[in-house]
Image (cartoon, rainbow, N blue to C red; front, side, top):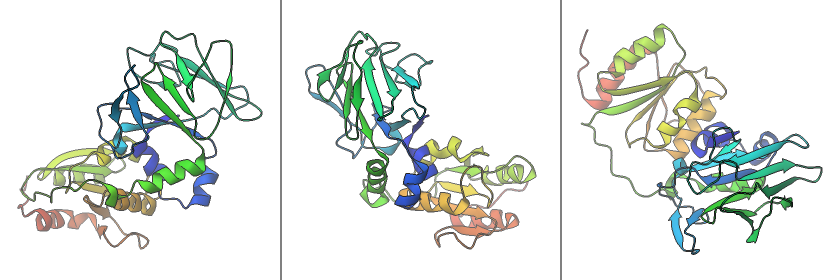
Amino acid sequence: MQMGLPEFLARYGGSPREEFESRVQVPHLIFPSQPEGRSRLPFLTTRKKGGKLRETIEDASAIGLYGLPTELGQLAAVGRSGGNELVIRSGEISKVHCFLRRTDGGWEVKDADSANGTCHNGTPLTPETWMELSDGDVLLIADFLEIHCLAPRALFSLLKSLRSEDAPPRDPPDRSRSRRFFAVLDEGPVREHVRQTVARYGEFHCSRLWSDLAPLIWSANPGDVVLCTPVMYGLRTDEFCRIVARHRADLEQILIGSDPSLPDAVTQLPLGMLKHELERRFGKKAEHR
């Protein structure tokens, strides 16, 4: 499944290595999903046709991942068309550019007779020949886009390197500006109450799925607020909060409810105290409607 690195971090980033490797059992392709992004990961680059450096992808929100096929003989296509398993939007990439396949021994890759070609560790591929794909291999797509193959252990090391202290310095939060609130909440009265409350202080973005909000959270401004309830879909609340605390320590976190396993940095309060807490934090008197 193709996903962004923020979503992948939210799903797996809080796991110890043994648990991570038991949940992530296939290598992943790592690629720049938004070439205009900035980043601190120097090995992820896109290049011009002369081999000159064009971009360095450093920002987690600009990195995409794709898990290799799991079933024997399963074929996955890479290209710019929306019907491919791995979609990369670029005019230099063919509609179907290359193929990946699961074999008895691992995985293979071959070119799909693309217009601008595919290279595997510097060797051009042909439509007639499958090449074994191993941990650490690099595919050069259309002579400009590098895609890296990382086994689960190497992928775990990459995630561990994405720590908040490695991020560029950020300006301190401006307590007077309008904030964005990201709420992981189920449908119903609680969601509506939260929406009406936080609308007095800034923008409100809400979903019952953390994966819908993960890209927004990872590109949020310092001082924005992440709200959640003890019951979430697809991710334990304590795991979610620890991931946010580790990778986005500059965001406020508020749990509506109680969970003794959460980090100290997470404010926990009953729903009825939310208005009071926001007024205390942001210094704005809530308007009564």
